[in-house]
Amino acid sequence: MVEPVFAMEHVDKAFGDNAVLRDISLEVRPGEVVAVIGPSGGGKSTLLRCATMLEQIDAGELRYGDLTVASTGSDGRVTYLRGDELRRAKSRFGLVFQSYNLFPHMSVMRNITDAPIAVQRRDRAEVEAQARALIAKMGLSGCEDKVPCQLSGGQQQRASIARALALNPDILFFDEPTSALDPELTGEVLKVIRQLAAEHITMIIVTHEMGFARDVADRVVFMDGGAIVEQGAPETVLGNPAHERTRAFLARYSG
Image (cartoon, rainbow, N blue to C red; front, top):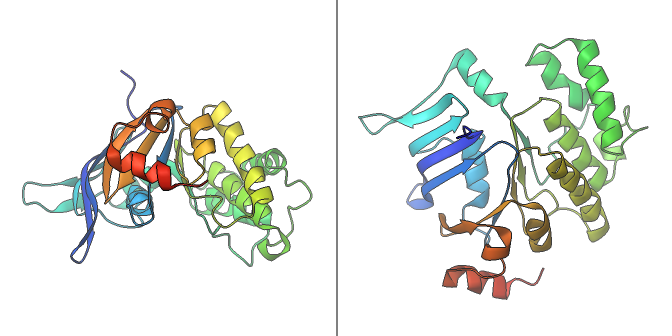
């Protein structure tokens, strides 16, 4: 069986007395697109923040391919990789935020090329050639020298997707990539993500766009109360959910 690109096993995370993730186990295989849906406060963004090491887990295991990034020892404490091994793990994923998080003082070209050159220590000419190809692919030709404030929200989000792709990650994480955009710009960004899905780029997408999840995802995960309530094929989870909590969420949802 093909090794998962990414896996969480029995992951817990709390902020003080507030348990935000409860016994989360999730695997994603190469080329798979997983949409994560659920109500606000259900743990979706915290799941991504723990997956990308912006937050540390309290218990469980986190893996990228053959690298075990974090695991719970016999003493009940979680140990993370350090140094070069941690940097190697971090190079295996890219993260696209809902608020873009581009460097405001850098051009589009520099935003895309900075990490591959400075962090991955790749050849500048090779990285810049890749960046130009990604800029064209994202429909941003002519924007190379612009800074983020000169771009529309949709253009900024497409630039942030190009920045994530420039790291040649094994998996891309998207945290509600269209929530800050109006309907027209939302369509621009979803079109790009659909294209990536068609190219079998491995992705986890936290989204409130149910039609998009139905069309693009191989698997839909419904989270509520910090737990995975159910997961499965989009037509099953969205069309014929097994759990009352999922049915109630989808009935309330007017998207």
